Image (spheres, rainbow, N blue to C red):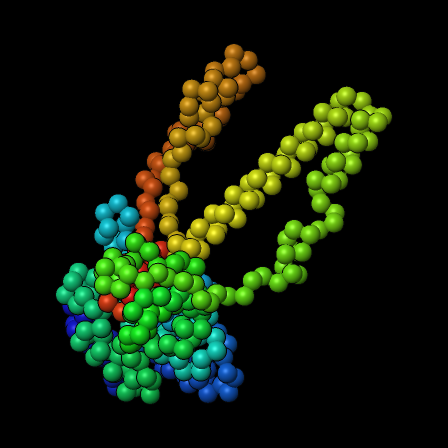
Length: 384
């Protein structure tokens, strides 16, 4: 198992001299030069650029093991690299898999160079996760040790980039922290925060914050909300709840007609339709509630991957299914014919279900946190 330093050395050796370039690296370098010389303020194809960087700088290890996506909900950091772990054992999958996520809200108004530097920063993390092993085993707990810095410095020198160990988009992060609370106690006069808590989510300071009890004992002030994002516009409300031609009103009209001249069976049919509509409306409200809960827990999209396997509720697997499908006394049931060679068809054995969890590095304290909890961690521990 390679250390970060050893993995970085292997990568640097592959691109430190142009004479050692392979044909694929030369093609990737030409593509990168063409893409970066484009005067457009945005990157036309970030995924193609990711593939080219992988070939040029990272020994072509990332395309088969790392996914690159944009996140529309990540507002606390510009990018994260997640190593997928088995949820049961908390150990990396074999072969290892990573995901790189870039924040669309933070990067869309930044210069194009910031997106490229952020992409390369996260690609270095992914490379050290895939090529080495100590990057996740405590040898380099910060994630930005000598191995990371050596490889980042070599890429900076080779391509003229500005890869740093931290993403510092403070103004953009602050612009999304629209929920603000002010303390009424003495800490409102003390720097650097002056009793102010800013957050991207609507979660008031409370016992879940690790500093809450200390603040309560030393200051004792109360938290008063002094700012929040503007409410939804009237148009949005009308779109969701102000439609004139609603299904409920249509059913009510239909019910009146049925009572005035339709048969009893027509009334029962209308009741069934109305009941289905109510159940559908209930399910819609529940799904919206679940989506809101997911948004509260994390600004990033969490992917739990489960491999297809055997289902206990599969048709014919239970007693009821067996009775209804195979225990019939009807003589019309025929056995499935054997294949030409006479051997029965072997069905594949059901695969065990494997779930994975993404671990990401906190950009502040460098601890590895489950991706679904990273934004909550930043809020509760680091007062983001």
